[in-house]
Image (cartoon, rainbow, N blue to C red; front, side):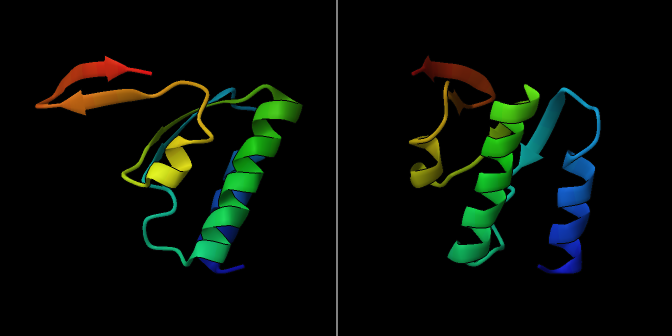
Length: 79
């Protein structure tokens, strides 16, 4: 795990209930990105954390509980 990934992991394991993640896997290889998503899932299920995440990765969108599509700065659609 790189130092940036470790900092993310440590930061996520705080007492915060809401976490914003802007393209959290964009610059990671697929295996590391999967590890980050597993950490997110664990935080959601075990600690009741809410994660608001932006992504262009449709694979990540498939595991989301709720998806909002933004177009021209406005919410265009909700899944």
